[in-house]
Image (cartoon, rainbow, N blue to C red; front, side):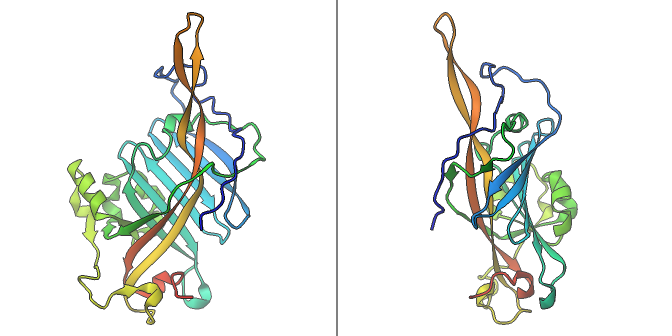
Length: 275
């Protein structure tokens, strides 16, 4: 069931080039960080960090979920790469390490999130306000059928080295995204196609697999609860009656993702068990 949307007046003042006509260049900005309070689906509140570097043309969002999982989204506009990272607390009593790291790398489309230079200009009027997204976007299911070699990943995006350093053996992408990047000239040697059900007829989904040491297809879901997904434009009329547009705010969105990917043993996917 989709979470009911609740409208909250926008008070993250986005002097986002406020008062400048559309298309006029903004002054160069240093990397900036904004912290906002965000409502989680379970009713809890967490703090989300939004960092923007207009020089590197990159945006990073980070929040901690109610179960302690740290979720990071890095959007590399230069390379058209989007990186999701999840640091999942391990269950020591079940033989897991202190935490498990996953990275999912997909193609970034230009209209998914506001530009880095606009993100860098966001300001808050009331930092104590708890934000909830104005728009809930549809759940996206992604089949991550290719592994990314960490040591070569910087050729795809320099941010993979920093964001995915804890997930060196668990960086996944999609064959359709690989084709797009190969056409841009990215070195294909960093990619390795993972086993699929057609290769291994006995390959099951992990939630149906009884043996913790057998390979299976794991599913992992994560959600970005609040992010600036679109710019809002206002109109201005000068003394001569000429109408011009300028950026005057943002629209916020929430979006959930479900990733399917191969693991060599179910022990690496204990959250995906049949209940």
